[in-house]
Length: 248
Image 1: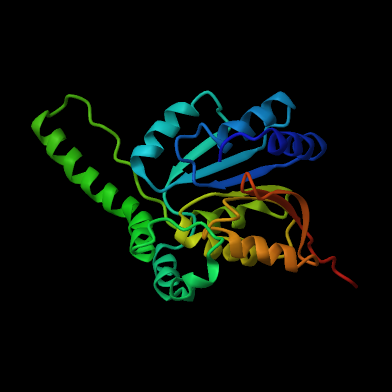
Image 2: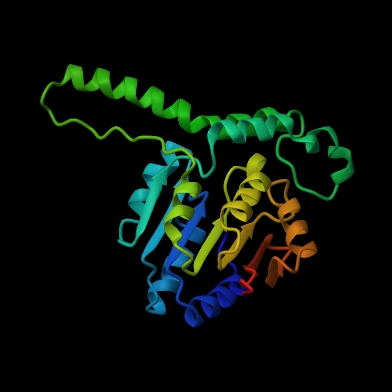
């Protein structure tokens, strides 16, 4: 997500006027996009959250992001996948949208020759990379005994579920910008896991395969989400959940 003046203006108002205690972001990339934009807004408005987790599934990007975000001590970069790996694969394999791509000419889709295969590789890369890295470090450390072992980075699965369990109904911010093929599944998991919780939601790539269905769901379910701001040209939206109040 590239910094956008309208996005920054709206999010600054949200952050300034609310006490957001926890932030979850998927798709850190290098940490210099939406992650740093939000971090600066929290710092500038003296509203640093108690928890800020950002998840990246590519180990190379994760390492660079960790260095880029080191100056923000309240941010915890995590190498892993926001949702359950096996369920994400199952969703991708069975997603009927790939059989009906002709219906969505206005939607952006990567690698039109075989997008489903490409998106499967995208979410599998983390697990593959960590396995190769462990083998590489084992050889290196065996070769140079006692010369200072490098840290082996563990791949964390289903990070969103752990985050939701720890929120305890505090006001949260959820930013979804991860692997394109599982964007709608990721959104559906937020909708399920954070049911009846109060949170702000940011979606990136709302005119892309990633989140066009998520956008449509929000637009057609005003009883669940209140649309705060939307920019189709820039490809983002900001909404707020509408938790149902208990009636005694």
